[in-house]
Image: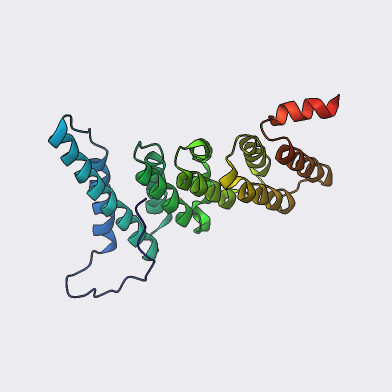
Length: 219
């Protein structure tokens, strides 16, 4: 997985090389996004060259988004970044999917971006079943961050269903997040108790679906 550089405040003067203005950065992001979404080449060297080129373009794009966050760009520009990152979550390369989710998580720290990110909730849920566990963990973290009173029931239900098939490496963290969300956003005591009981039973009866467990309880 490609690691994101550590967050450091940008320096206005740079190191003598001359930095981009906010307008230039926005233009660079749009231009890079158009190029990185172009078709892939076919054949040995051509395909390899195209992959390397796309990786470089993606790296520039992620850095541009990071810079725009540091510069406190307006909500419209950041919303465009979220929309673009949503497309990257579906790209076949796991490192790009990971960075897409990671940068979306960082943007979730901006309160104005929550609604825009929540529009990609289904894509994030799909990432819970990604073959790469680092992508699955990042998707779980992002769902945890965007959960609020409006979507808490839906997200908790999705996470409970995922818990029935999740591998051992992520089950403890997943169960803990479900417990925290259900307590934090409990709409009623009955709902909270139902979630906790179901959580306990799912962890005990690994492999059984939530529907099967509910059916057993009702009989």
